[in-house]
Image 1 (cartoon, rainbow, N blue to C red):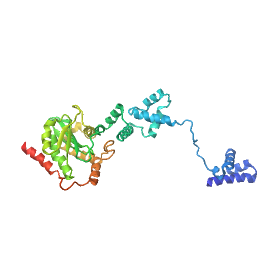
Image 2: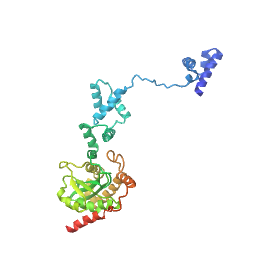
Image 3: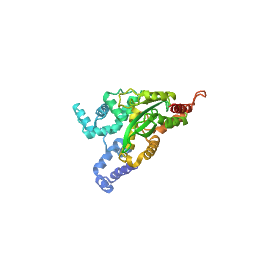
Image 4: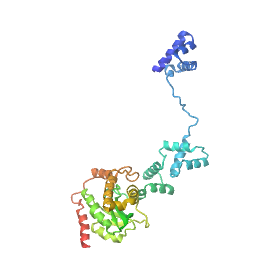
Length: 351
């Protein structure tokens, strides 16, 4: 209002002098502004002398809302398309937009990049507000393989684990190096170990020495293990049955992995082995095992996993949240995993 009163003073000065030009000269303004202020003062009073936004309410070049909505719909319908391909689709529908405008509209709606479209589609499908097409499903599963396993819901850590053994590198004089790993479906918590050569007992050793004791410390029960088709059910089922753990392989064709195992395999391959494959002979197995253990600690504690099921939360944090709110089991039910670990030990003694 201070600016409005100042302008009112200029109008009063012109009235007192009886000369608009002289009042404008003294105050350092042009007569066009003076007459605009006087007209606004006569129509609206003192409020009319306040500053106004220089941007008009209806911009002639503004994209219509229905066009902007159509751009967003096309981006979700074809999530892998860039702004140039979307521009051609819009042109075929009679909408003349430049690629720059298309990208700007997508950024305003949080769909400017592939990651944003992936997370949007996944959220809509999880909320059951959108039925994904084949193209959309392929796009989401390519970014987050574990999304295709959303039918295998778990209510607690340790209920269902997925396991696999993958070749990751080669030692010059000893042969291939295999990575044996187990991933918790509930929170993507991972356990892994390196082995030289293919060992049929690598998975059971990892379960006995690392996985079962870990869940035993937290008073959790390992109930089921899903492995890839390469790990024959007949080789491992008796051993796991001794420890009262259900073991079976996926129904996927040979060479296809369980979604959670595939995602972990991608992460460990890209973030751990990518820069170390050429230096395996120099580092040696002991050094590689140590570095893998340190990397796993960082992965479980700090690696934020986008999309289903973590939604940007590290695995350890998800497990801690569940442990903080879980209901203790009744006293008559066993809560420790000592029996499971003993089952593994007895099986090995029998062998």
